Image (tube, rainbow, N blue to C red; front, side, top):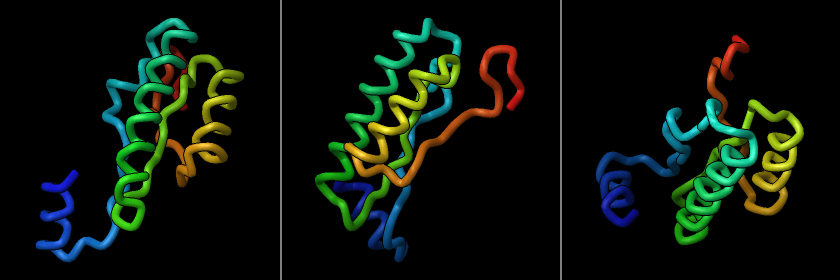
Length: 97
């Protein structure tokens, strides 16, 4: 994070939004496995933001292939982790969003 903050200061970026890469959405995985991955990714993002809350804001990920689990993790992201929202992909298995 320190190198990123140095780059931000050098290029006059005040705040950066952090999120995972789309391959980590894990929409192809079993729902509980995808929830486990989402929780791990979101917890890591939360730790990074907590160390530098004036520099970073996070968008979480949720297991979109399981709507009830997605709602559960979205609620945790916003209410417990303090995220600004979530990032989702344009396709979930056979569903074109």
